[in-house]
Length: 158
Image 1 (cartoon, rainbow, N blue to C red):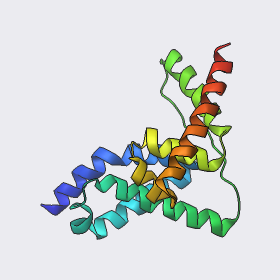
Image 2 (tube, helix red, strand yellow):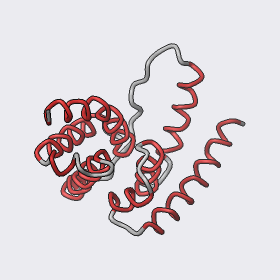
Image 3 (tube, one colour):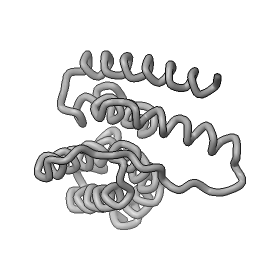
Image 4 (cartoon, rainbow, N blue to C red):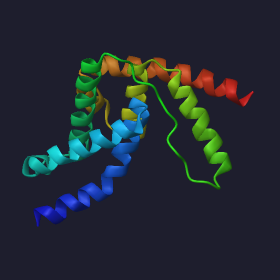
């Protein structure tokens, strides 16, 4: 029963976690590795993780923490690459690319906060836990990031 439960959890959340990590880190290959590692750790602790209110938040936290450790070890900044998009969605793609370009203009901390809060749909408390900072810091970081994104997106419309 646990195996089926975990497989359903994996099927439901894997792609969203991978995409959020790709946007946060700017590297789709690394995002794939981190997502796989985080879900593997979730499986190893599935009885505890499945009992959590939002198990997917635990997966995000594990993945972000591992990314932080990896980046610290490598001592190099992350760059954002544009993940591939399906064809025949011209308007949506244009908006998506504009948003991705605007996200690349954010400092890494602001980009991570925006992606975790709005694309990964984590709560302020969960973002704070993932980023290892206070909730107030997350709120002020999001406020600054969103103000910057509004300016960037308005400039694109003109």
